[in-house]
Image (cartoon, rainbow, N blue to C red):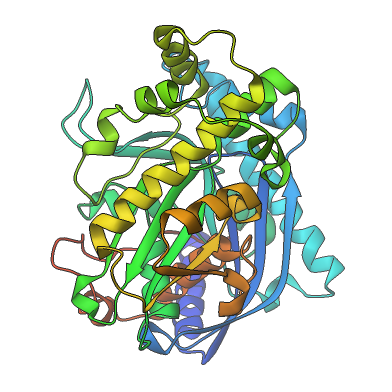
Length: 403
């Protein structure tokens, strides 16, 4: 009976939240780069095309090296310790909850003042196409939403990517839905490019039925992995190493032979496909004579640039002069990558994401807050009217109620 009473109270609370004109939502995001957890404390007003977001606070909490090692033990591995995976799922949920409570205390905000938490979780496996075992896509993000809800006392939404797959998608990229709600409807064609571990973008032309979204391939993941193994640094700061290096044409050509780059869009990928082992194999097969590390990094940077530009040109023709590209994610800070991209796309004006009112590093955490807002308060049918016909039906997240 107690369980029934508590559940009924929480369901009533959900209805109350859905009727609010403004909701306080915390968005959580940790990407395939696994460098930390992005936390965006947001005020979300309205729903659908009338959604407006104010970011009250943003912070990235870096993962300690010991936690990164724990995640790497199971990330995109065929053979893992299943007990370790199971316990890490619970641990990360508890860890995320502790970070949220610390931030709320710092901001002098009570947990009861927060309506929802939107947790992307930490991706440990992404299988976008039919695999060896079953003929449908799958994906797995850990950081249990029930642990977050229970330990914070805040209703938590999670498993957004699994929900997308159940509705007919590949689980990625999900940014398009939030991009449509927050950034479409202008008189200028827009490309919203995110450069995390993997590169993806949403194309928002003035003609809304031509909207599209896709992953294009690796963004920072190969560069970061190479830097970590061979230079003992986390990443190529500002692209300085790539700037010093020379592009190796034979290596670049061999890397671009990957089947993924010839697939039709929309498509998605991850480190299961693009990882350092793959690069090392290509280097050995290409028989490159003792290339300097800066030349390898310069070539990997060019791989990112080329594969983005090729998809953008295919979609837009790069003949219009009325296209703006707004860049978010860690790659937005890589000056070499940005300079090369502007050369490849001379007909497109590249702008910082701050021009849209959101810090580029906060964008994905904010977008998951928007997805949670739609799940609780939105009208999916209205959003679906804005989507191209080949996109899966809208469905956002699983709801975990606190006890």
